[in-house]
Image (cartoon, rainbow, N blue to C red; front, side, top):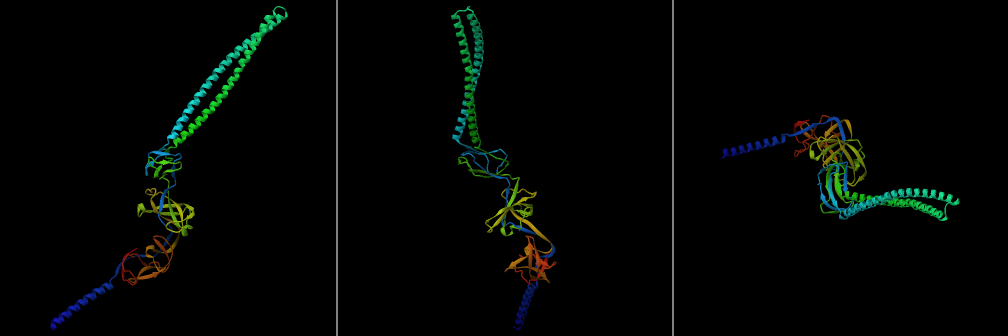
Length: 411
């Protein structure tokens, strides 16, 4: 019995020793962490858009119906690439078409009337020339005959009745000449009629041209090469003048529009360099420059007030398509020879910023004072010195001041 008791006590002691050894091992063991040594260098200061920017075209147009009509054909869909002059849609207006046809008939009628009047004038001119020439010859002969008759009558060689006949012939010739000369008035009257008919032709042509122009406006065409990014018309729909039909944009002339918090907008200047992070190309950074700052601060969904800026991409390595979302960071300044810490390693609780550093194999919390920062680096004004190992693997559970650690990797 004593032997059995001793054996049990001995086994229990052994188990306690093993448990104590395991507990000591766990207590004395270290957690593997990654660190980056604080160092001096340059830090760039960036202002980040409060939400993703959007790729837009600098040439974007809403194409509207200039003349009302019913959509008879839709020739372009959203996303279609079109060339300048390509038809996008056809509208129809039967009443306008009837008016245009009638105006065309009026032009033909007015031209026919003008041609007839010009023909009558030509005929009148020919008759006038012939009659005036004949009347002039007859008058000249009658005058000569009357002069001879007068001389003979005064000399007593011509009877009174023959003299009266000569008087009558001269009077008839003078009347004939007067009537022939009146033909010039007829020509002038026809000329006035022709001028009136010319005005009628011009008026009819102007009306027909105006209606033809209105008919042409029923044919919606692309004013420049681009992409149809929106379509708001379907076959059979009636559209009033001014109703939007398509939105066309030039994809070769783009910019990124992004909102900047009002509190940081004063630091933005035209020409400042920017970094672009398209969601379509995760992990890639494109270069850009601020081209415009809108003069009005507007209400934003993300913040109370935001200032919209435009950024032009600089030789993007991959295509930026219209409508893409792009995060924007604008470089507003920088400092040289400052103490740097990874921004992800700087934490904040209860209004105090701090970081974990490794000192003598243990985690130590360091309250820090920071300066400017960006997504990658934060300027340390106080609390950490160059060369100290700042913990970056903060995802480790239960990592806290006093934890024993080993350094897994150091940068």
